[in-house]
Each structure stands twice: as C-alpha cells, then as structure tokens.
Image 1: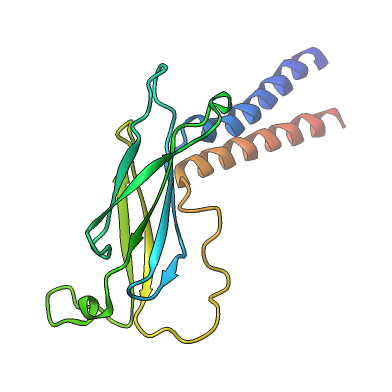
Image 2: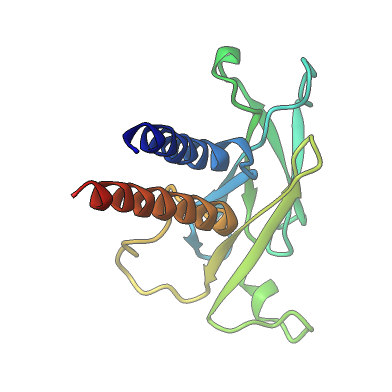
Length: 182
C-alpha cells in the first residue's frame, strides 16, 4: 500500500509545481501608471511589460498608449532596455500630460465631477491588449493619498483562481495520504 502512495504524492507535488508555473507561463501584459491620482495638467508615466515575442523577433522601438484624458489623446511609449538573458518580454515607458481643468469642467458631453477615473489602454507588439487607469482630482485636498498604487496592478483573476484550486487540491491530497497512514 505504501508503494501506491509514493507515486500519488509525487503526482500531487508535480501539480503544485505546475500550478505555480502556470500563471507565469500564461501571463498577460501588465500596465501601471504613476502617479495613480493626479490633478489636471499633471504629467503621468505609463509603464507596460509585454510577453516575449515568438522566435528571435525584435520588438518595435515604441508602442502607443491611448486615453481621452491625455492632452493629445495618445502617448508614445519607448522600448526600455532589458537584459536578453532573463526571458522577459519587451517593456515600454513614456509620459503623457493630463488635460487642463477647463477641458474637464466644460459644458460638453465629457463633463465630469470633482474626481473621475480615466482608462488608459493599448496593445503590445504580440497583439495582446493592456489597460490601466488614472484618477483625476479637479480640487485636490492637501496631503498625500497613502495606500494607492503598488506593484500588483490588475492581476489575472483566472490564473490566481486556478493556482489556488491546484494548491488546495494538493494540500487536501497530502492530508488524505497522511491521515490514511495513522
């Protein structure tokens, strides 16, 4: 009976390792904007990390980021130099100026309240779409807005859920195997 448990435990361990590697293998592009909360007329920095291109294909030198809140409606993100031996895909960074307060407060169809969140989106060289957002506060109160931003970004809920299910299954199998020996 013990001989049958060893392959089963090995299989459960392999599933755990596969579950840990799966989100990295099927990662989606990540995009961040800094700062996340700005005032009209401010400048934001948009950073995007894309998946590696197939083969030894060279990535383009720039990609575009689009948003209605950008002064010109788009921003050019430049290719950021990275080490080729890391296996990471191309990364891009660029800046954009937010429209002035009068563009946000006018009587037109895009009139917004005091605080409004605006989407920023684009596509990586492999065609994968990315998105992030920025909050524009027309009347900021003094002081810092702690707890905003961070390195987690949007995340991929499907990959996180799949990893959690695999981990829970492996742990349950381990408990089952250990309990049967007692």
